[in-house]
Image 1 (cartoon, rainbow, N blue to C red):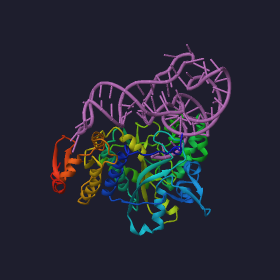
Image 2 (cartoon, rainbow, N blue to C red):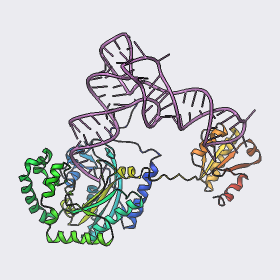
Image 3 (tube, helix red, strand yellow):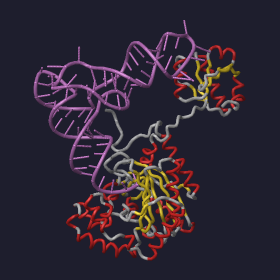
Image 4 (cartoon, rainbow, N blue to C red):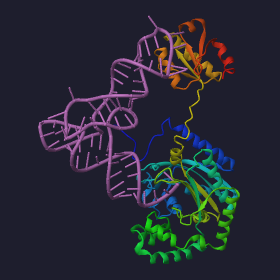
Length: 417
RNA sequence: GCGAAUGUAGCUCAGUUGGCAGAGCCCUGGAUUGUGGAUCCAGUGGUCGUGGGUUCGAGUCCCAUCGUUCGCCCCA
């Protein structure tokens, strides 16, 4: 074995990249239409940024970050998610004076995890963040946008939108106490993992996949029944808007978020088609994070979607035959090849898309490559054509051929299919 | 970090109780001396993941290791 990729990373080869481009272009188009503009933040940041934004005790920060000291001794981490850097950029550039501020990003993220289908150590997310819009309108619109994107990509079957409210600082603390009391009573029936969670993150127990824990979770007091007036209004408003937009959704009172910074609205789009890695898009409101990170008090909401998972869902959906296009110049004989290079450049100067056969050889071989390159027109330049300063134009769809003078080609090209 | 399966040609995979390394697809050439795809014929291509061990002999059995996949965990 020669040098191979690092564990958990992979190449996206040309066969696969059209699906990725479709993802990216569809997302750009829809995000833009909803009023979002692109932001590109660095791929690495000070480790402290993620520790504070994502939560120092979260699994992501504790054991999944690619962290290293740079040559100046600074602790640097490859970004494990997108929101922290966007919040940092928001604060650093004083953008609270430009509200509302709506941005999208797409790009690689890094987490040191055990690789699995749809889960890589370098993976890609695209997401949106919206600052300054406190009401449920922003939440509902964001979900509508996510679903529109998935619908446009035709991967909206086998998907469900789940929502929940996580409350806010005021109502979550008393609820948490209630929940803790309840769970401590059931401690004996919880899995080992969840007994551990009692200390660290009791809310997370609600989302445990263990059957016994789930049975207990269903009996537990629910956050949505203990919301303060403000949070309850917000959640009701959201559901009214979703209903009004005819977006199918279910309330999942057991859904909690992995990252610490969320409050009020949480949402998740899941699929049954990807095994254990079932989350396709997830997001929520994080009204307190900007202030916590040292900025003004600015409400915000965002989401991210996993592009590898979208690409997997896209697989097989687009059995589209790549359409034939462009010119492919093949030459026979040394003199013709030399002339062909010059002609190709001239034709390109005039705006034609001309691909030259790089390998030469028999005409049969060159035509085969032209076919595989999905060229629409083949330009044949052999000894005869060279002598009479013409080129043979062959349409690869119907096989029709015609002979043209060199300077006629550009004038003719507009008339071709 | 834990548990399990798996690794043979570029790809998908056969390979029997341990006894000569195989097929299909792809690729290249020919049938067609200047014409792609379809058909037929022929050909190239292998450190059997890697390193040890057992054996007269290992793709096959044993140990280790790396990768991949599935589950746990985590999450997009």
